[in-house]
Length: 95
Image 1 (spheres, one colour):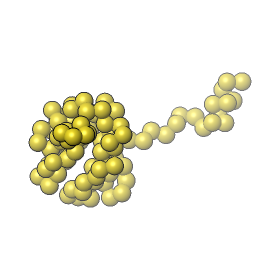
Image 2: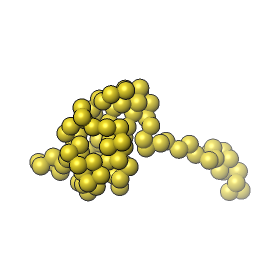
Image 3: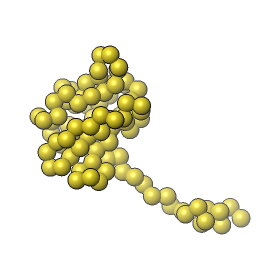
Image 4: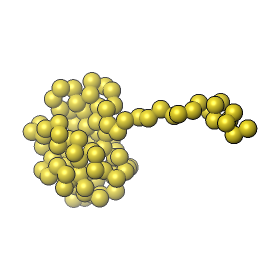
């Protein structure tokens, strides 16, 4: 998994197994996200000059959520949603 560190403890990770070379990230943040010519996987090109807004713009449009963003070791995008019901509660509901 490719990752790049940025300002304010922000780390952007791109999972090459999830990237489908859709290139929406390159449209949302041109010059920041680019597709590698050999692999077709998105990579960060100018992460030192990228704004937080550009990093999030590219991550938000990724259809497979291959781009994740962490700040100070905690994932902030995409958010991890906790289940509404525990497995026991779900089982009780089915009965």
